[in-house]
Length: 87
Image (cartoon, rainbow, N blue to C red; front, side):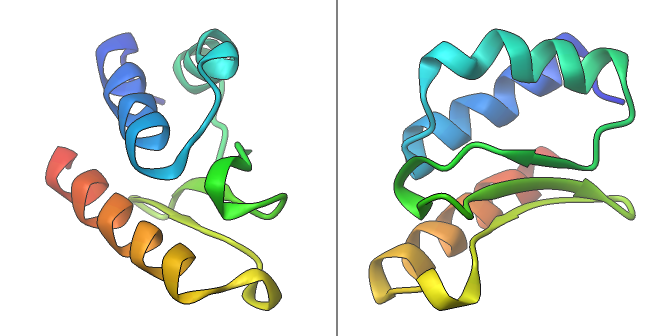
């Protein structure tokens, strides 16, 4: 699980880099701080398959392979670099 500060820092990246909706922040923070949630669908600019993962000691985002575009791959790369810096 994450602290509230960590969860908000992650969500800041999801909003800024991946276009996640601010309206889902509170739900994300509650779930990440009270449960062992490994997968969170946020969609955003990554489409329906846009997901945040907190799994096996890593935090990262990805999307469905069939939805990958050069723009989405760039977004994923930037987000994962920023998320990696949080660890």
